Length: 111
Image (cartoon, rainbow, N blue to C red):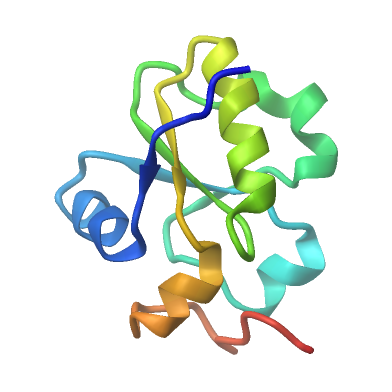
């Protein structure tokens, strides 16, 4: 499997604001509920194998998880399916570290 391209959190945010990319969050529901990127689509990694066809292949995507590991794997799988997707380097931890907006309650990690 080829490594998907990576994009840093600030660049992903700017691209999303300009409407150039959509965000795909592959964290599990309990992680999503603690705080996520407004406007992101949620397909948990555990459901990606059966739900990947819900992703609009006519759009460009950036995949995100907590730290960038699960989203890297998910991005590689989705690229094989013909979806234009990049991995967000550092995941939601990087998003938070860059003080980018997170939905309430705004908690990224509970440990």
